[in-house]
Image (cartoon, rainbow, N blue to C red):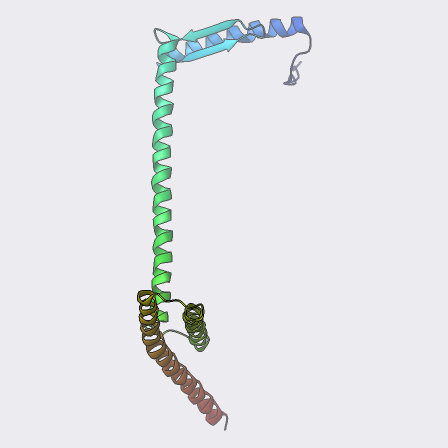
Length: 201
């Protein structure tokens, strides 16, 4: 007759629990010993009974030696893993920052009227609106300094120089570039529409 599988749960009866612990403890210690002898493995086993009594087995001269070896092994592996994770994080951050810098550089070049060949009509209009807002803010800031009776000649000259520089760089270069490409794109779209009309005719 085949014996049914025992349900794995805590044994409620204290006497039965103690008997089972003793039998299985001895079996576990025996298996640990056999593993160390048959496979030439370094085995360390620690068991505390429900009452707190210690049972141990060590194939090495002492259990502490096995414990120390375990600590060294886990420490080295944890440190290596942490270093690798840190390196990967730095690489990911570097790639992300490089992409952000590239996008920022591209945006600045477009604001200065450079590399506009690939811009659509909508992008050029957006750049033009940003330029107009920037110039408006600069003019308003300059007027506010004069309106409150700002008497510092050096700061006034600095603002005037800043204003003239921005007007020269942004207004002359950007607006002309945007206008040229807007006209070019509009002409190109118009030619395509005329070509389609001719094909339909």
